[in-house]
Image 1 (cartoon, rainbow, N blue to C red):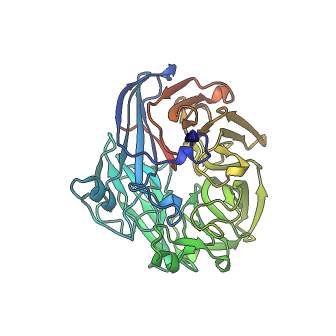
Image 2 (cartoon, rainbow, N blue to C red; image 1 turned 180 degrees about the vertical axis):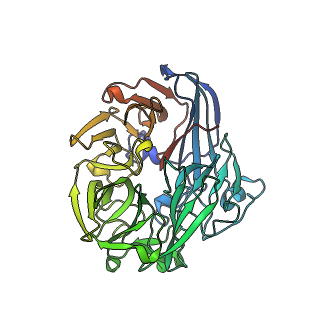
Image 3 (cartoon, rainbow, N blue to C red; image 1 turned 60 degrees about the vertical axis):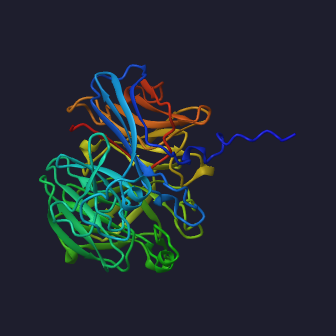
Length: 451
């Protein structure tokens, strides 16, 4: 008699399993009441391998891009759908015509983030890949070089100035001995592209802006020719000899204007925010002590936590301070305060044993003025990904509104959208939208209102 097969649903990796079909589900049920002020689409992007790629060979962050979306309007959840971004690999596997538009880089797999700018929505990624425009129903429209003004792609975390509406970005490409510092106008075209010298081709996944400066993170994850030759789709690894430094330059500055300052070796995938206070710049970041060294295929070698770097722009020094000891990632804020002094930050709290993963059992709210952290725990067997903050009104106080995040339940093997009211952060969600499917743990979430 055969022994019963052991369930995999409570395995730590259950929420990461790929899905194999594109689905559309209209008129979803709602538990509780969706705030009537919510009128937009919750989108999430991440890796979902088309072919069940061998995770022992390929970096877990490099899977084929899939976008998931929920349309919310008038207290209703009108639809959920998921779609692979139609890269070259996807069109070969799924059929259909190749995606139009220019091509740049080793890959066109833009699975890193979502961007809304100049009336268009894009999937974006690192390493020279050009943005891919998506329609409001998540169909792939075309690869874009912003009307011929974007020559080398974007990295995954551009920063939007909430005052001017301009977009700032950095871009790196392994064939170039510098990165590009980009300013993109409200018309969606690149206005400035300044080359900034770096020691090696570092993976500058993100950067920060203040109201007057840009902040660059030149850290010891660099292009690896050996990994590229072995077939890695994310050929970057830890290089102790590269060192770690922060670069500060005026927003309209160039290479000669950068003030470089050394910091202890580490890696930052995701800053929370940066702002100025007299001669000092305050940088709140999620700091990994080390990634892609002993484990080149996943960021699992250290327990990321929230740190503050205070830059003295006169003395050219950096003071480093740990703000919280939770293991955490995916910091978000009230984006109306981007580049200016902030009080609140929201992060995904992770189990210490699951460090370096993409989801965790709780959301954290940091009150950085009071130096207090609150937890919203979603309960046993449930894991949440990155949250997005939506203000209650355009003139609401900082952090007053709702947090939306996708939650996976190991018991049902399905996901739901959870909506928290920040007025009762630790209380029950004001609404959940159960899905009849599972959304694999992914990267970044966005709230899109301009449709």
